Image 1 (cartoon, rainbow, N blue to C red):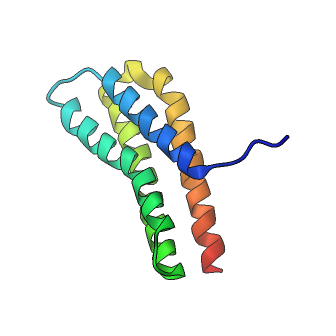
Image 2 (image 1 turned 90 degrees about the vertical axis):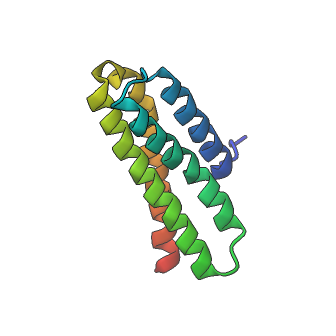
Length: 116
C-alpha cells in the first residue's frame, strides 16, 4: 500500500525541525538575529502554504505558494549564515538543509505547473 503524500504534514514537520535546530544554536550577539530570522522564515513556509489552500482563485493560490517558496529559499540562506556563525553545526544542519531544499523544489514545481 502506497504512503499518502501530505505536503501540509511535511511542512509542519519542517517547521518543527527548524525550531529544534534553532534551540541547538548557541546564543550570542551574532547568532540571536540570525536565529530570529531563521525561525520566522522556516516556520512561515507551512503557514503560507496553508493560506494558499484557502485562496480565493488560482492566481491567489499561485501567489501564496510563491511566497512559501521564497520563505523556503530564505530559510536555506539562514541555515548557511548560522553555519558560518557556528561551524560546529554543519553536520547537524545537513538533513534540515536537504529537507528545506526539497520543499523549495516541490513548491517551485507547483508554481511552474500552474503557470504553464
